[in-house]
Length: 198
Image 1 (tube, helix red, strand yellow):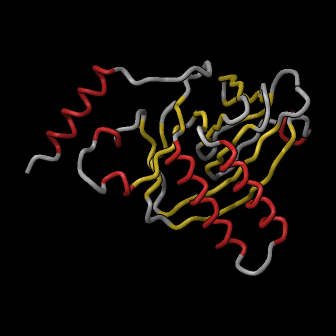
Image 2 (cartoon, rainbow, N blue to C red; image 1 turned 180 degrees about the vertical axis):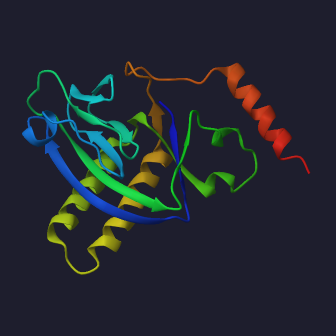
Image 3 (cartoon, rainbow, N blue to C red; image 1 turned 45 degrees about the vertical axis):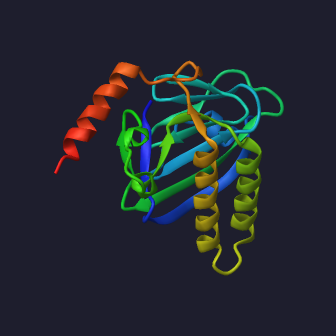
């Protein structure tokens, strides 16, 4: 699992948003994919998703970001009270995929303001704020009042910014907190310093 870097100056297109209970037949039994990024946030325990050959269990507050054309489905038993919010989106310019987050290594003020960096698999620190905004996004999507696309896009950006500012702890494939190797981070820091030399 890696990170998606979204340019902060990007324009956003929202394809679909919603909230699904885990028992919803339409996504659990059929392999599917879409041409958009899809951010999922689990609303209960043991939300089982399969992404390609990888089986993932999300718990309340865990989030999973799927890249375009990523095949996925549900698997295993379904627990009462679990489900997820999702939003499918695209940005222009397109996000950049990186294996690890390099932004924390940049010392220059303002560099981190150029990208919104989301782990593909993570755990939200401020789940309640994200969930409240997700509920507002779904409500706006269902109402489809004038300018709803612009309103939803603004809410989505605010929600992702809130999630990043309050912290999204990256998880490994087994659902454990993932910490980058100190040696690997030091090498990357040296590479970035070398690139930035005048």
